[in-house]
Image (tube, rainbow, N blue to C red; front, side, top):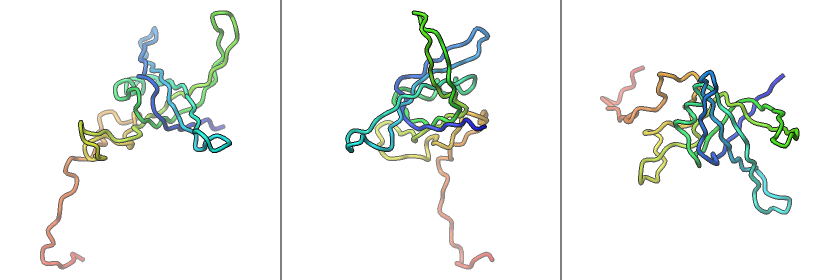
Length: 154
């Protein structure tokens, strides 16, 4: 069986980081995802608000680097939870349990409106398996080479 979901949208609020009794970090947030189509009459686009929950290092990553309005790509699994409300009514909720979260857009320097990928972490950065490694390109990743005598080396 396969249960995998990937969504892209903007966070509706800052992630809420909490800790369980055993001090396991857990972050909750909601992602607003626009549908690819408008209404039946071609009117206004519809938006889905999808609840997400991240655990452990992913929760800390989300809490540290994402804020309200951040574009994010969320990859994980869909989970359905049954619960009882305060009045004793049975309720059901769907949420995405986050496995990986990526930046959906590159950061911009203060006052700079150009897309400046060389000085930021882009969507290639993942919270899973990247501890201690930087995937940001070097500031001067490209430099012009000298043609020499114009002869090819092969």
